[in-house]
Image 1 (cartoon, rainbow, N blue to C red):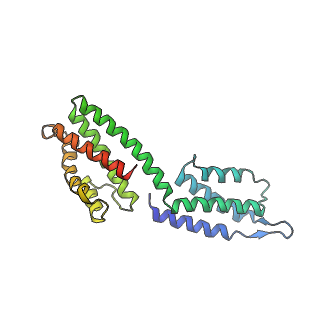
Image 2 (image 1 turned 180 degrees about the vertical axis):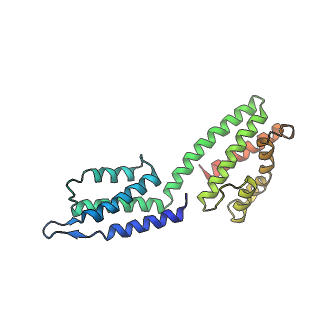
Image 3 (image 1 turned 180 degrees about the horizontal axis):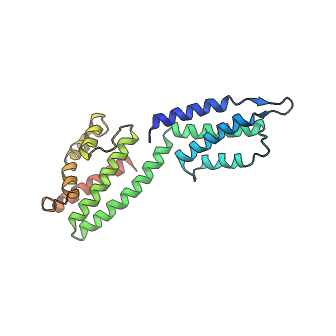
Amino acid sequence: MDTSKLQKRFAELLDVGDRIPLQGRDSRFAEPQAFYNWSGSAINLLHGVFGETNPHYLRLRDELSRIGNNYIDERQLNACRGMFLGAKSDFDGGFLFDVKRSIAGELFGDMVALAKAALDEGHHTVAAVLASAALEDALKRFAESNDLVVEGASMEQVVNALKSKGLVEGPQKGLLSVMPKIRNHAMHADWDALTPQDAGSIIGFVEHFLLSNFG
């Protein structure tokens, strides 16, 4: 998700919404064509960014559904603009990515739990594969949430990108350097090169990384 493009689109639509002309004298109402052009784009953006179960999207959708006969009074116009502004504020504040990171953490946590169970049952190669997949995806999501472009990058390239931006430091930085080697053995079926200790090492690391960055 390109945050800069989305921020630009939010700003554009906020400006368009503020410039919707009002008509009438005694009873002021929005010019219908301008309003519907704006509201269609606004509701589409909220749906695409937040999803169909998000309160911002649902409130704006419900407010729009109450408008009839192309008559949008000033109160309704201001309500719709206020809802859009609230969604923009949450997006600008990073709330969207906090939610995504929390969900991602739960999903990856499940994979780590499976990896730990496999290791306990003596299947260290299976454990290494599961933990490697979780770590690789987690690293990419963490990088993307910090505006790094890592699509198609190897784990080693992602690790280097995170290091260059100072996103991993201290003991975690040193431990992370050895993870791509274990990952490559696991994902390339180089089973003889993997030990139970390797599996335990990558499980412990990804567990700590998830707690630190997706908790």
